Amino acid sequence: MAVAELTPSSSSYTKTALHYSSQFSYVSARVSSRRRVYLKPQISRISCSVTSNEVQAPVAAKTVELKKKPDCFGVFCLTYDLKAEDETKSWKKLINIAVSGAAGMISNHLLFKLASGEVFGPDQPIALKLLGSERSFQALEGVAMELEDSLFPLLREVSIGIDPYEVFQDAEWALLIGAKPRGPGMERADLLDINGQIFAEQGKALNAVASRNVKVMVVGNPCNTNALICLKNAPDIPAKNFHALTRLDENRAKCQLALKAGVFYDQVSNVTIWGNHSTTQVPDFLNAKINGLPVKEVIKDTKWLEEEFTEKVQKRGGVLIQKWGRSSAASTAVSIVDAIRSLVTPTPEGDWFSSGVYTAGNPYGIADGIVFSMPCRSKGDGDYELVKDVIFDDYLWSRIKKTEAELLAEKKCVAHLTGEGIAVCDLPGDTMLPGEM
Image 1 (cartoon, rainbow, N blue to C red):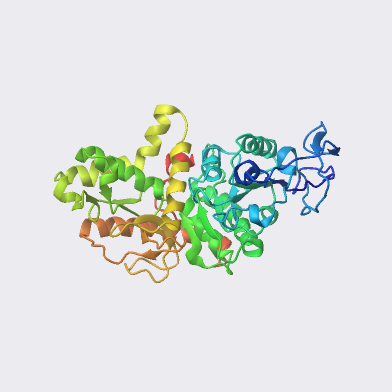
Image 2 (image 1 turned 45 degrees about the vertical axis):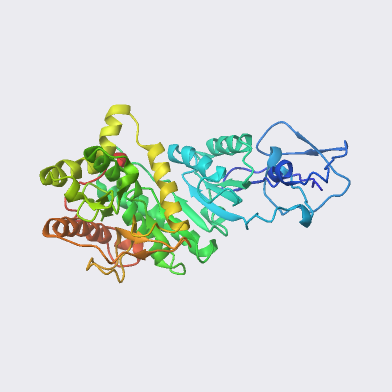
């Protein structure tokens, strides 16, 4: 085992990534009982720009060269050099996960699920690359400290920064959560433009430095159009790799159907959210099933399905805010986990899941060139295919056309950010979800 000495330079926070290497975590869990690891008592000082105190670190007899990293502190400064025979064969190649808005409430719930192995599995080591802003940088340090204190054995590395071109380097998953909330008196067109600029820049950064097969999950609202902007600014990454999060809407729909039918929610399947993550979204009860039976055979109250059920799903977030005084950060984090797991584990036979994906070549007749929530299946390889065996009636199709029209209008509103000409904003009413306010 070897520990390297590292003395990072003191620098400002602007466009600087802090890097934490935590391969230490495997030592206690993975080193075989036949081998003992000892550190000599010789002491070396590690100077860190993020803390005024010097951190003391023991140095072993042999020093190995660490990767060059701008800054580090605490246990993340230490790298242990294990012999090949000591590495457990079940270890997988580390994957890089970038998260924007990493100091926010959603990330506060999500990051610890990622680090625990709940998302990618109990034998999958990960590196977290956390993107924030100058204003949130000190909070990002606090996030890194909490991750450090949690002793997650699968968390091998944490880096933080405010430059997407640094933070997104080699990212294989990008979870884009950070977005500006809608302020008082702000028109929806204004929010589309402001957040669109953020996602245009992040798309360019992903295109420049991320893995060529990076999977991108856009959470920041308006997420469908933000995902469209992002993918249009990342021409070297397959458009199919971009997703807008509508899984929370699907989970809410399953909950309401389960409550009405008097069953546990795991008996509800084949639920689709069609269209935009807005109040025009279409929770599909026509194709959904309860205990393997069509919903309309179990719940015979058509009026409830068409009116109360649909409205409850569309406005659930607003009701939660009224009750609790805050948005649904925890359940959003859970839905991000569900969305990722749906892509990295095979879809159960006959079932599907919802995700906002690029419509090019879709089998439903929905307009090409927008990001639209549709039913998907996955083989568990991170990819997906659209479900073809769905049915439509006049009620469902008319609702789908309404949410399609909204997304086409949003697309025109951000044409200047997608390289498709001059923006023309003529949005059909304000259908913003409460969480965007």
